[in-house]
Image (cartoon, rainbow, N blue to C red; front, side, top):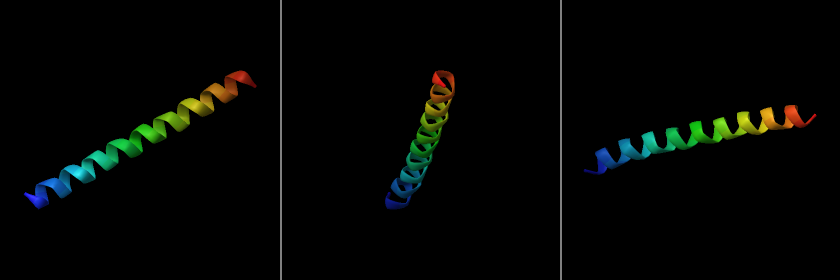
Length: 35
């Protein structure tokens, strides 16, 4: 059970990292459009 939880936590963390990266890319696009 704890191993399954550990694996799902790793997947969730990966998803969060991907979302953060997408937000950074989107913010950079918005900045370049403003400039």
